[in-house]
Structure formats: C-alpha cells, structure tokens
Image 1: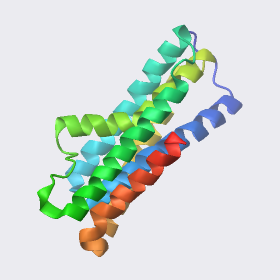
Image 2 (image 1 turned 135 degrees about the horizontal axis):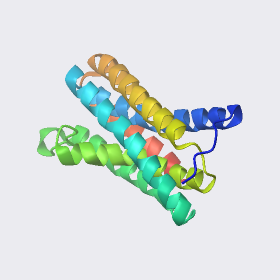
Image 3 (image 1 turned 180 degrees about the vertical axis):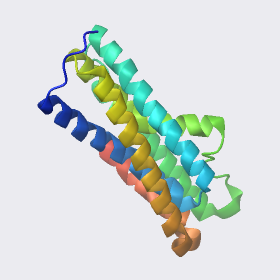
Amino acid sequence: MIDTPLQAGQLLTLLIIALALGLDAFSLGLGIGLKGIRLREVVKLGAIIALFHVLMPLAGMFAGHYVGSLLGGVATTAAGILLVLLGGHMIYSSLRGDTVQSFDHRSSLGLLVLALSVSVDSFSVGITLGMFAANIWATILLFGFFGGLLSVLGLMLGRRVSGNLGEYGEACGGAILLVFGILFIF
C-alpha cells in the first residue's frame, strides 16, 4: 500500500472521521459508566478500545486495497445490531433485578465484544480509506487517539452520573446503547 503525503484537506477529513467514530466509543463508555465502573477498568477498557480503533481500520485499509467496498454497509449494520442487543440486555437485566446476570464488561469475552462493537465501523471506514490510499499512520493514530479518549470520557462521565441515578443507571445506559444501535441500523 502506498502512503500518500498528508495534506491539510486529508488531515481535516481524517480528523472529522476519527471524531465521528470516537463518538460511538463515547456512547458505549457512557452506558457502561452508568452501571458503575472502577477507575482501573476505565483505563483498561479505554486502552483496549483505542487498540481496536487502530487495528480495525488498519485491517480495513488493507482489505479495501484488495477487496473494495463490499462490506461497508454490512459492518455498520452489524455494529448497530450488537449495540441494540447489548442495550436491550442491559435494560432487561435492570428491570428483572438479580434474576438475570448482567453483561460483564470485565470478562475477556465481554471486553472483546464491546471493543469489536464500537470498532467494527472503523473497519468499514478503513476499507474506503484503503481504496483512496489515505495516509496509514495519520489514520490509525487519529482513530486510536479519539477512540480511546472518547471512550474514557464517556466512562468517566457515566461513572460520575451513576451515583445520582441509583438503580436506574443500568437501564439508562442500556437505553443509550439501544438508541445508538438503532441509529446505526437505520
């Protein structure tokens, strides 16, 4: 893959795309933060999401270079469906109380699902950027930075607000994920 020189227009475009993709991580972080989360978990989850926001567009750029834009709409829809399922499960768990085990973001599988759910759209954007031979380094650094930063900001904001919401925090977080998931699907 050929790295083109970074121009002001390309940098601005990549910056806006990275911010938009990071907002997905912010919404997920807000939803999880409302459930209550420790500071150590905030850092861990933020770092994993940042890593996936680097790896997924990088893989997408290489795939875009060879495959084209076959997966663009499918990847965004899949991310939306995952967010709807996660949000619905959180709302259901909140309404049922202790009888249903809530989604565990601390498990390895849970962490992987969360990171994939917010970074799969980065893969589809990476495919498109790969077709246009965008600057790889600028792309992955901006995507990783904004993905990690906005997820941590969402987690911290949700963490702060959760104390005021009490038992309704998980339902509010689930509703946020549900809404963002529906927006991705449609």
